[in-house]
Length: 252
Image (cartoon, rainbow, N blue to C red):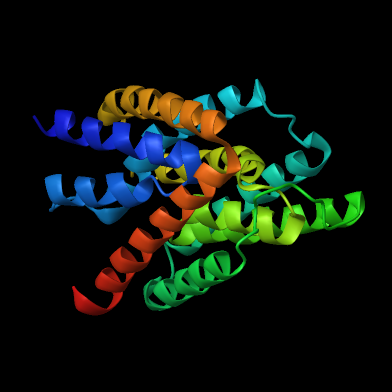
């Protein structure tokens, strides 16, 4: 019965993650509720081992409809992979408590800025030269990749916001490109945590299948309804992330 509950959560997580990121907001709390005595690292690793497959299928679907900026995104993917490896190692030797308390305020600033700038991410308008865009994309990949390996909540949403705000992508293109970065961070984290025995491989298959199904539906909706739809899903997901992270940091 436990695997069925977490698989349903993975299905919904894949749907949300495909549109704007934030699937871990759904699946991770369910894993903690179903397996309350498990080591947190095992649940984080298991979450990523399933989520990476949904993210990969979502990226594939986006690639069939959206032209990726490969010259920009591939170096950023490598930077995200390296950042996530470093963050995953750091979490084994340092506490993430300070990030837990800071996260709600960072997310609140992101939400306020998105609501204030009504036209943010509605249309694509490159803000940088190609070389500067490549460098900024690598910085985004490395910094948020480290955050994902070290802590994690809201990584996909941070990628989307950074690509919109700093590089001038619309929300749809930002969400598509963010999938490639998120694949890199998840693979790096799963590889490191898996080697340390922190992944429950027997749950990976049902979680992955459910996550893929959810991601295919989410990608279809994002492509059908466009940047405006993705923007409002982004607002909704960040709002829930604020509430959830504030509860975890100050009230629980």
